[in-house]
Image (cartoon, rainbow, N blue to C red; front, side, top):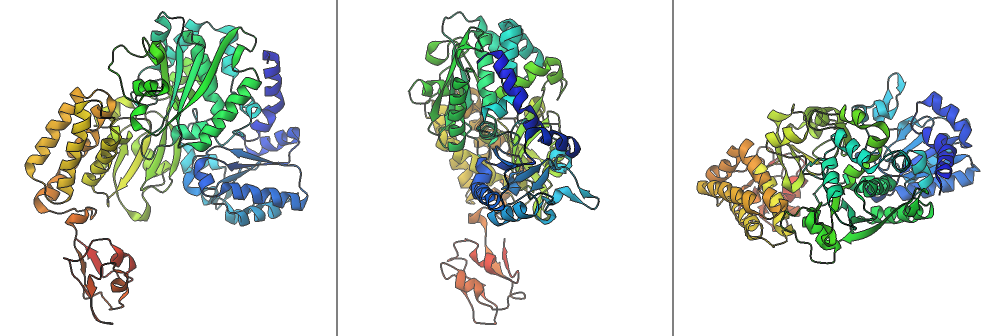
Length: 629
């Protein structure tokens, strides 16, 4: 493909994509240019797919065919972000945001909205867009209003499997600019000036990493993408790959040009079948269109990319372990130095960035380093994508400028804590991060602030915890994960994670002693100083942060033998309040171990010696007579 052919595709499809980015009136004007009266975008990401969005698409196709409608375009996109409302469907040019769609709902929308002269089906809309004064654009709702989508700019906007829509949306424009107007040094200087830091966790300056690799003398160099997203509750990278895979291919090619590499590898976990399939489609299309391979855009630069599937080892998120796995060996970290920029994959200079980092490259090249660095904070430029989950109303994917406060994310974007519960903490950074207490809710979120309060950015998981959460149990959960995922190569991590887990288990079972806390803190310090890689060095972080802010909870478990949150089973006792019990027998009939006795219409009682504390009785009681203490 020539540059002229690339520009022709961009011009031909531009109006089609622009309809999805503008307000209603402008959209109606653009729609006339496209040949489609309506465009229906349906989320084809993993979240909505698991909620049967593909059945919604099938029904919509059938309904349109039955109605004889041929001027409506159906587009299967990536994630829109508001995963709690999936399956999501948006109709343009109106921008009508339909939520929690079913095949029956799709049929209704086709018959009432998509027919010529039809109107929006208000009762099926996301109610956040419905106001007393009419329907507002979904971009003006609290969930989207404070977001700034840079990495996610095309997710939920373009057909994820159509390279021409990706080109029309701006993908490969930065590559064209780089190959025709910039030197490798120009590219690296732009990345340095942008202040972009790695979004995979450590926050190392991206431009500096590229400059080190460029300076390394070798005829062979490599560019790698870390798509082995392993943090519990994290799905940022997956969503980018599912919604806009070409932005990663383009960015890796630009990096190859900048450092003098001609081969790239994307290491993606096999548990991401949708992302893997779309990556494969994107690679095939990029080759067919001459955007990968030999003599890209006729500019004399060669670059190719291959996929390598990971088997789900969390440790392979560490750069040297990832490269060892690509080489065909057991995924274990290597000592550093030498760092990968000097000696990485197959012993050659290598740069490795994660998916979200790559997704920021195109906007930086096209809009300039000054633009990017003007967003965020002085030490943390740009935006950050968070997978917002846990005890929060709006579960989903959010992208906000660095420096946005935790309060804004929880209370405004996230919609607050459901069921009237109080916010207790936010866990960021996955198993390597820490817990941010309610007292720090006004902290601006960036790399340095999170470290200062005992947490870290990590890849971007953000789990919200409410008042019913036991912080000792949360620490134990993450230690179970890291103990299981330790590769076992170094003693501090292999033994340390298991010993920390034993101590936490002892405390949650009511067998803890005060000296166990001292042991935990001493062992945690040894692990941080002597573990080989970041997995072991950061494994104690969840415990240390909870000890810092919720220390009393540990001593309640140890001294009072009590879990105030009512989570640790060994410390619980279920009792029946005779004043509230009506003797309906529902609790007794649902107890799996027959620990409840009593006669009909008389107060019942629980044999605490026999009770296994499963909570079935409390779940089935209709009178609130059962309490756990």
